[in-house]
Picture 1 (cartoon, rainbow, N blue to C red):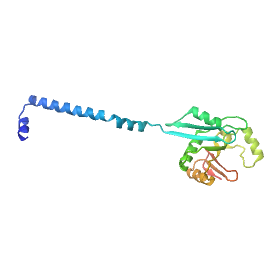
Picture 2 (cartoon, one colour; picture 1 turned 180 degrees about the horizontal axis):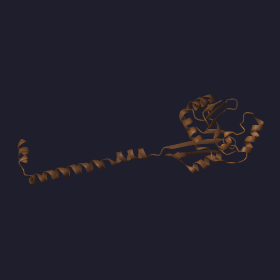
Picture 3 (cartoon, one colour; picture 1 turned 45 degrees about the vertical axis):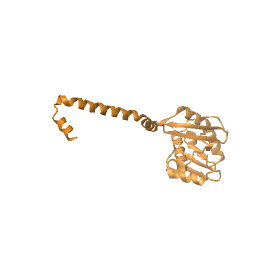
Picture 4 (cartoon, rainbow, N blue to C red; picture 1 turned 60 degrees about the vertical axis):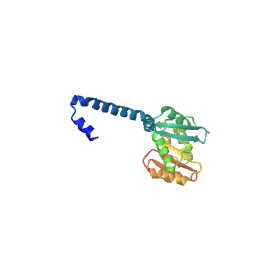
Amino acid sequence: MIRSLFNRANLSESEQQPELSRRRFLRAGLGTCAVLALPMGASAAHAAIRRPFEKKLSFLNLHTGERTQAVFWVNGRYIPESMRAINYVLRDHRTGDRRPIDPQLFDLLHLLQHKLGTKQEFHVISAYRSPATNAKLAEQSGGVAKNSMHTHGKAIDIRLPGRKLSDIRTAAMSLQMGGVGYYPSSNFIHLDTGNFRHW
């Protein structure tokens, strides 16, 4: 071993060249093998990184019996077809009028589901209300605002089957986003995308 090192040290540069070339070749070969050995693990990691982040919601309109389950947001983008499907189910059931629902309301509902640790379907008592419907309801009840956020597609009244209304209210209030109305006698929670407040 010592002799081979000594002999190598005494070789001229031109005589050492084949040894260096062999080393480079072996290094290149090992590097290629390492790259070829990685695709399974690397592609799995790459797939995990590229896996889309989705937001999904499910609704049952208690007045029409219509349901929808839709991925409404993927990787920072709202999905127009899904929004249309949800807007249809959340239309004014009395008049059939529709209005685009504020996407922030869907984000709020998604956060609420996460807070509650559920993916349950929301049972919808009221979402969009046409001005005509809202005026009629305001005449019948002092609890309906004349310029309700429902008429702007920014409010929804919901319940979750098997969940205490008080628990839904607590979870919604902990988010400190929008309005949270508690109506235990009518068995629903009101949520809207206005300033944080509660009643």
